[in-house]
Amino acid sequence: MRLRLRGLSAKFAVILSGELVQSLFHFGVNIALVRSLVAYDYGLFAIVFTVGGIGITYIRSLVAVPATLFLARSLGRLAERGHDVTFGAAATLVALGLGGIVTLGLLPTLGLGALTGGAFVALYTFRAYLRIVLLARAASRIAGFSDIAYAGSGTLFGALLLHGDGTLLLDHAFIALALAHATGIAVAYAALRQPVRLRFRPSLRRRYAAIWPTLVWSLVGITSTNIQGQGLTLLFALIAGPAAYAPIAATLVLFAPLRIPTNALTNMVLPEITGLLAGNRLEPARRLVTRSTAIIAAGCLVYGAAMWVGLPIIEHHLFKGRFLHEPMELIGLGVWSVVTVSLLYAIPRAFLEAAAAFRDIAYGATVAAVIGFVVMVPVLLTVSPPWALAGLLASEAATALWCWRCFGRRSRGDDPASDTSDAFVAGLPARS
Image (cartoon, rainbow, N blue to C red; front, side, top):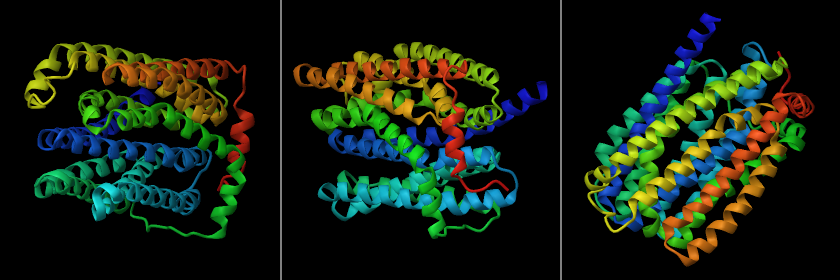
């Protein structure tokens, strides 16, 4: 038991260090841009970055989670090669599709510069997929090397390219981030010492057709979740405008460090939970979820108290007083509440994904999105934009309650996950 805990601690330290390095880089880029761009241009950058986050959720749901379920139930190098061919090709298609959509969306505003935004989103999402799969393959050190390469090269490219102003600076920022993600991907594949296998054979369509009846619920669920989370945030930005969204986007950056250990913990426990559920070991999986969430809750409380004290100083020095006319205390409290509640259901939701309970996730996210929309839009149209954070909070709270309810039922065995997960795995590449 002690050896297992020691191994998990070492693995968590490696994953956390990677999350920390790349998050610090993102923090630095955002601070540099918020100090250099007008509110409208920074708000536009934040919107594109949010779209990149949405892309990650799709590639995670459609490719990374199925790959994790497959790897947890497969053994040997042949299984990993089968994974590389099947899911690597699918991830490439999803990433290119997302990049193309972003490019088309940015064309009216950035012109040819939209290509840089699309390239950033495509590489951003593919590297996220590769990172999750590396962790599922117990290659956390390679994932860490990729993170360090991404942050290090991004810092270098940023120092060389982050000059100018307006849309020119936006273009340079997207180019720097795209090159950094490409470097991180290249380092990961070089460390694996395996050739890249991207074969778009008919077998790819057959395998996805076999798992589609269950995977479609994953797609519906992630779409509902995006509407409930990032979709409401984007709606907020579109109704209020990039300039009004800028102080909230900047404050979200300040609370991004809360997501660093949570993302690291989620990426670490997902393969663990998947393995436990594969062996029908519900009680250890339940303990892992509850204890992990307790750690996240404690961290959110401590960080929130520290930010409450330091926010005025941060706004004055880091943001150069650009938002002095905004109610930053109210914005800080609202953002902390939204982020904290969203993190409190991260691990239970990972449990539901490992159990292939995509239908449960879809139902809960759909209802939560409706609640958030009903609360946020009237508030946004009648009072100042910061109060509309109440809609985001209501939506996240509804999602949290639903995820914990479904987790409790399934972890007790009242609603067995084996029916959906076994059917899902049956359509994946054969075990070797």
